[in-house]
Amino acid sequence: MKRLGLKLSLNDPRWGSDKKDDNKPQANEGKKPGEGPPDMEQLWRDFNQRLNSFFGQKNRPPGNNNGGDNGGPAGGGRPDFAGVRATAGAIGVVVALIWLASGSFIVQEGQTGVVYTFGKVSHTTGSGFNWRWPYPFQTDETVKVSQMRMVEIGYRGNIKNKQARESLMLTDDENIIDIQFAVQFKLKDPVAWLMNNRDEEDTVRQVAETSIREIVGKNKMDFVLYEGRDKVAFETQQLMQQILDRYASGVLISNVTLQAVQPPEQVQGAFDDAVKAGQDRERQKNEGQAYANDVIPKAHGYASRLMQEAEAYRSMVTENATGNASRFKQVLTEYQKAPGVTRDRMYLETMQQIYSSASKVMVDAKSGSNLLYLPLDKLIAQAAATDASAAASRAAAQAAAAAPPSSATLPADIIPSVEVSRQRDSRSREALRDRESR
Image 1: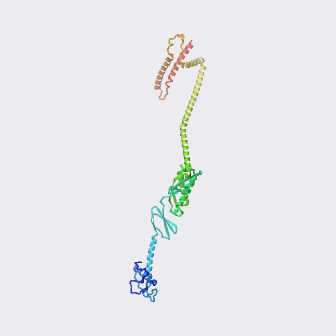
Image 2: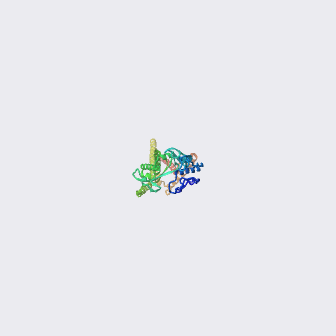
Image 3: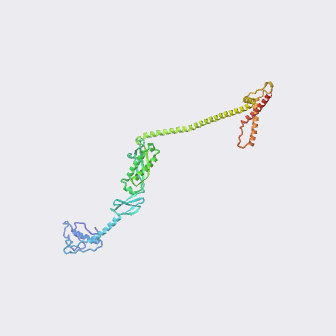
């Protein structure tokens, strides 16, 4: 306004007059300040002249319009409407450019732009510089699709800031449990996230609370508190994703983390006592099981050894009985062939077995032998032992020379008895011949 040269003081008697031509009579000349309002037509003419000079147009001197048509009281010129139209056009062009420029917008990396045409989603844009039709035809909104979002159920900010209405839940065994957990999610469809949800995070929170109440209501309290925490979190995540997909909310659940799972504070002491009692019970059961694992195998081993010994004794008795029966049958066959000889032989063998274990030596006193004071039993035993060792050495040498490496030899404690029995058999046969000869 200062550049246009307009005066805004209403007390100026020459307000609105042309300062370049002071010799012309002015419409308000002679008026004292405060006598009346200024001439509006003169103000209009002055304003048009200043606009024309500002945009480089020549001033049109005011002239007589033959009767003062559209002129002022002093016969001034007509208003310049062409200049007004030019000015209005330039202003309109500037306003149109500014209006078109207002349709540009920038979408950052990791975001998606959603463009609305008359309130309806028309298309989405990627990151970078984008343009749309300005308001009121189109509007835009940017959504962060790569950002990891999180909602908290049962607490806000800190697990100590509990929300009892969200965290207290009922289990399958009719116990109350306090669960606080967090849900992390991302957006997989920004259009569905904006258009199908009224309060986006509150929707996710309500779905999470509904899902975990369903999962907890199907399980026992001990399972949720201890060994089933990971399973409860996984099943809650799966159920949340199914519900949100049915709602077409455009949400992708990334993780469900259980922050705190515990009984209510009112019964925490009693529950701790019950847990300690259960731990003591498990400890005693483990100790009893360890003792059983130590005693039962030993008992099984001892019982197995007794059974094997009994089986061996049974086999020995059975085999001995079978052998004796077979020997009796063989002796019976020989007895039927030669009864006298067989009877004498049986008598001699029986007496030999009886006297072989006796430590006394019977000597015929009528023969008058001088060897009554000799230890005959020890001499006989020593001679038998010597003969047995010599026979054993000869048998071992013969077996090593003739038998294969895998051939079995008689034990050393059996060989002397075999030799002694042979010697006794030979002596019994000689005594039998002497007896028969007599």
